[in-house]
Image (cartoon, rainbow, N blue to C red; front, side):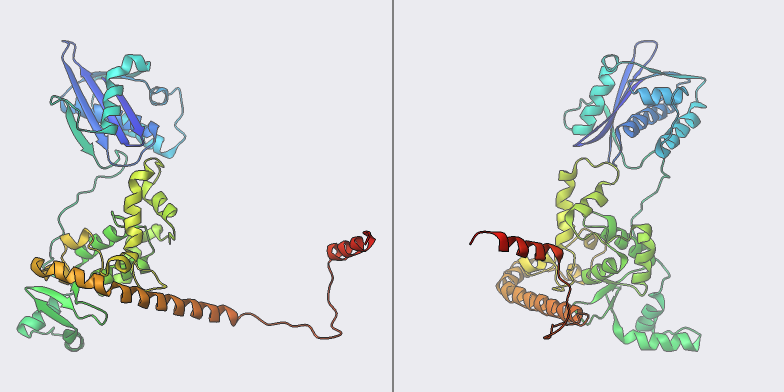
Length: 401
């Protein structure tokens, strides 16, 4: 088996070529949708080839790689110092036990041409491969635990259940204190086509979410396509402006964010957050970071840059999966007319935002001016005089007039 990994500006890929003793040849190409280094790409290619050989029930395997680091680390000539290299090496050693005979040999790149070409093609594009080449996209690193993503569905029981039962059937909890709470909360909620909404003081009604849906929305807003890896308070505020609600928004956003609560205030930090360890391909991430920047609320104007340009808020992907009130009540026939009306009113919208920004600046100015202690000099006050200034004055007196 020949394997090779490639890491370039367009992506990361791996090439695998399996040859049987009878001369049969199988070629595989894989494209990785996660950032890796060159050495990690070489290990991913090796591990993928070992899994393919295991699936084909191959018991004796000779592996040829052009990576000196991978071959020498496995053969215990080099020591794996980096943590990720240690994890990859350990994973390779665990898979070796599935083979009766296994060894790795380093070869020159000229003897590894096919695997090298496949890895580079996979890193660049899928469109030019022949039909007999199996192409698979890998979305999780081999050293990371597998995670299963499922569609976010309504849960049978959640915090919404007592409110829905009271609104539909008039049923209250047995506990008197809980029943009193439900009676007090109920006027703030309404049911529309089986979906619970909370009345909002600032705009359209907010769609209520169960815990599973809430976690999905938080992750999308925090680290998805429209994300800037913002802090939990900003994430919760943005979710509410999108049209969602649940009682523990700030607490849940803080838990999901975890150690990633970083207030990235500029586009460069946003790019770094999205690219992770691999700093390549930043030009591909720039549109996503700009989109996140333009759809995030700005504290000075209490508006998003997108709304100041077009007069309305943008629809992000998460609103399609879990429709908000504005998506559920969308009317295609009147949508174009309403968009044109928004454009007519956008000038006033911008002027109001400019007034808010000016008021905010004045508030900040007053806040800092309170800390300033004004100081003025009176006649006969003693002051310090800089030596450089006095020397300059003395020198000027020596110059011819």
